[in-house]
Image (cartoon, rainbow, N blue to C red; front, side):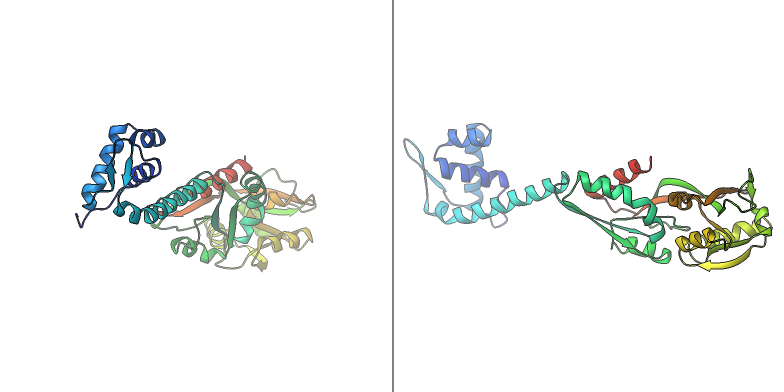
Length: 299
């Protein structure tokens, strides 16, 4: 016996077919190969194991004692292989599976509902797990492989991740319909200096981008309220507590009839919402399918 010999799946399938059918021709028909191919596989298996598996008679092949002893093990191995193949097939065809993603609550509220409904309707056996996190936890969730991918706006993503733009957004001012800026054809950053504004707290989310742009435009913002969530800023604005500065996509998604959204200009500040993955990390079929569903929901 060759101590380094490892039977192949093809050899084991040939052995099982010959054992059950007792004839090379019948085994070849079952396996969709030639009779000589089956004969060669059995010979290779016998040579590797160093023992005869079948005795040739005039009418059929008779299993030896070694073949009888091997039979239960071969059946178990092939059963496990077939089960594994079925598992992979189900994952590839989205008959089951799981998608995990990281996203901030603000983005999740207006990006995910439509995509989740469409995806769940098409692939009801695939679970989607949403890991809602703060902006400063976003990249670490991806690098730690706690999730398959993230959806967000990383300011300095770093070389460890790959970024694919999902949609382009812009910073905007949101105000009530009776606010002085509501009827302006164009709203510049310099126009904000005359009005109290609401935005997120320092160092959080888009605040560094807002402060940097205002400084670049030579504007001192009169920030009267600082919040942790943009949804809070919106109801404050709707209540007449001041205009809000935030990404335009989030504000428009609210579809509040008493609010007007004006993209800020001079300068116009783009803010991309992206699919973020760990570099070198391959996405599953389920994850790729969910990203496609998300893209379609945004069209």
